Image 1 (cartoon, rainbow, N blue to C red):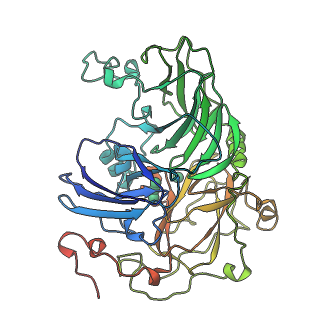
Image 2 (cartoon, rainbow, N blue to C red; image 1 turned 135 degrees about the vertical axis):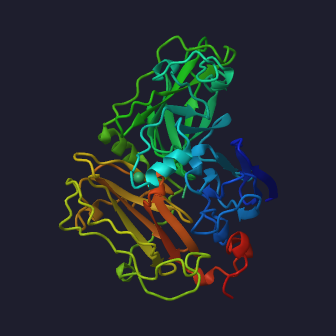
Image 3 (cartoon, rainbow, N blue to C red; image 1 turned 45 degrees about the horizontal axis):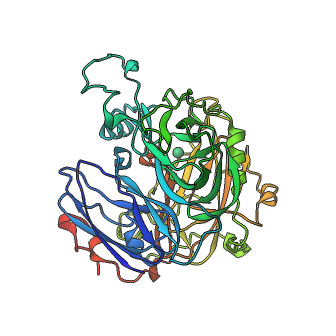
Length: 511
Ligand code: C2O
Ligand code: CU
């Protein structure tokens, strides 16, 4: 294991380097905020930060924001191989482009339960023409303005916007230039006959995606850093915050290139598909494939997406032992100990009353437009007894618009959870748990809750700290779709002073 020391400067020229690490390495990133008017914080998505909760990078939960001109040191160990991400966790900065992927390799001599010749990573995203500031203002104004659908989909940072769809078309190449080489689609070059491990991640602001490669099937082998019992798909559904590894074999006609596409699913969006090129060497990487890009699946085919969710199981031989939910664990966890750190650094800022324990399972009509009496506003946190097992049921319902329910990807910081089950309709407390997969559930850190459906998760509150659990849709999280869990905070030890307060208030914390 090595110590990998980085000095990053965040400026208004966002780059997204892919980071390569080895299992057990210590990562040190000294982050200097060179933005003139904005704070920043960076979250290491999927890294559990065992013993280093202050390096989780969640502004408002684990640290104060890094002010312009300040430097903050993130230091943590990458303790598990797999595919992870990093991204801004301040305001809506992630969607402005501050993100990248992290690949943690096995130590030399150890091998994965599948084989491949080459390893590649791509990040899928969506892209808005309006600035993230405008979005944030719209979402927080009394005259609420929804962000709407993105204008393009990006594959590895590259998109192709159809300039002819602009309301005021312009020939000015500075306004819209489809021939600019910087705007040409991303090309991934493959050698005919070889097998590629493709690490695909989604960091969309809003969209759920279907990813496919014309003429090639994909074998899913990893999800959020855990080995998957391999299964084959024609298209892979990805929700913001998820990472997958798929194996693809370059075994098609080598005289041409193939399309790689992304399509929006779950929303009836106007966003055109994302396009990239699978380039068979030695064809020219810019050569357009001789066919039209394959169409994506129907946006509203919930069953197909649910089926993929259900197909993801832990790989034989890599099934993490699942703790049972003891009855005593089910008792209300909201013991109030007035500790002074709550969440990690913000002592008095958080409400000490317990947030609600659930919702009215019996009477809540998930198909009815709610009148919002169920909405609660609170900055309370869920305090979980250290080392207890926690089951979470995510129940999806109707939005404020009639006959509409949306898919939300939920992401947990500081832990992975076992995915016990997914179902359609309202969760049945007595019968649905009988259908849980207790045999080979996959562990993940991000899962979808499908429209009008439920998702059941279990995790062990065994990582001392304060951790966010939230919808990974940027605008939903910005509007407050998330909670904070605290557990074992008395075991955290001495907090670095750098997380305590910002600017002039730094160091002015209670002893
Ligand atoms: Cu990738 Cu709290 O987010
Ligand atoms: Cu959401």
